[in-house]
Length: 127
Image 1 (cartoon, rainbow, N blue to C red):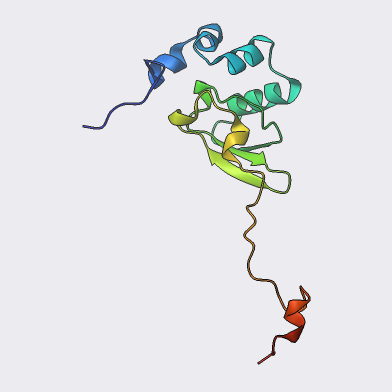
Image 2 (cartoon, one colour; image 1 turned 90 degrees about the horizontal axis):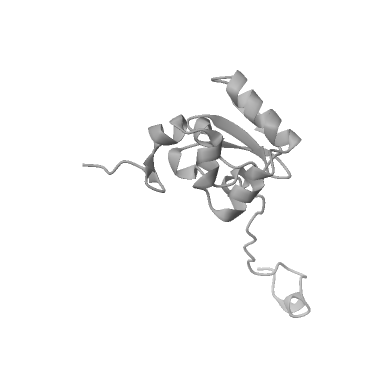
């Protein structure tokens, strides 16, 4: 039997039924402080668009938006600095920042140097 997801001892249905103040009180300190100070302009716009456009994914630059229970099941395109990456919000993402799921850096894997890249490679036969 699969175990149902719980966030700090509460099921997804209980989280969705909570008021914003009750939900804020169970978040970790950094998120709690951020939400108690109020949503910024771009965060407020994201939340309004999610509430208004039910099935339609939205695009945003607000990487510091905290994922709320009402966002579960929605699709958000988050800007990485170069492109928009799609995030499908699941219940396990609640309480995290949106930017955590759209990685903004590319890992660099260094290989062997090419011909002419160093002094020693000048004498390598081209065969």
